[in-house]
Length: 179
Ligand code: SF4
Ligand code: SF4
Image (cartoon, rainbow, N blue to C red; front, side):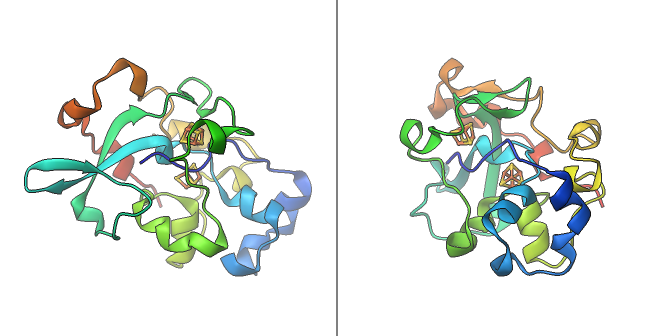
C-alpha cells in the first residue's frame, strides 16, 4: 500500500502557536492536522506482510499487524518525486492513486502501517514531535533529510520494478527514527 502525503504547509502562525503541545490529534483544525505531516515520504513506499512465504501488499482492508510483521520496501508510488520528496500531484492524488490513503482523525487506526518516525504516530503514542520536524525548524525539511529520516534520494519508482520481486527491495531504513 502507498498512502498519505509528502508536502506540508508550515505557516509562521502555526509554527509560533505550538498547537501540537496543547491539543490532541482529535482536536486539531484541518490546517493544524496537515501541518503535523513532516513530509518524510515514507508512507509513499510499498509495504508488505509475510504470509506463508508469499508477500502480501498491505491494503486498506488488511487487518492491522504488528510492526515486526510489516516489511517496508524502497519501491515508491509512481507519483512520488524522489528529489523533492513530495507528491507529484497532491491535489489529484486520490483520483490518480486510489490506494493513497489520507490519514484523518477518522481513520487514525490506519496509523499502524506508518513508519515509527511518522509524526502522527509519534503524537498518538505520546512521543511528541521530533527535533527534526519542520514545525521545529522554521518550516524547513533539511534537518529531517540530513538525519536520514525521509525517503529523499532512497526510493525507486514502482514503474521501474516488478512488484512481485518485492523481496529484492525490502529495506530497513524506513524504520529509522531519531529522538
Ligand atoms: S499519490 Fe503517491 S506520491 Fe502522492 S501522496 Fe499518495 S502515495 Fe504519496
Ligand atoms: S509517514 Fe506520516 S509524517 Fe511522514 S509523510 Fe507519511 S503521513 Fe506524513
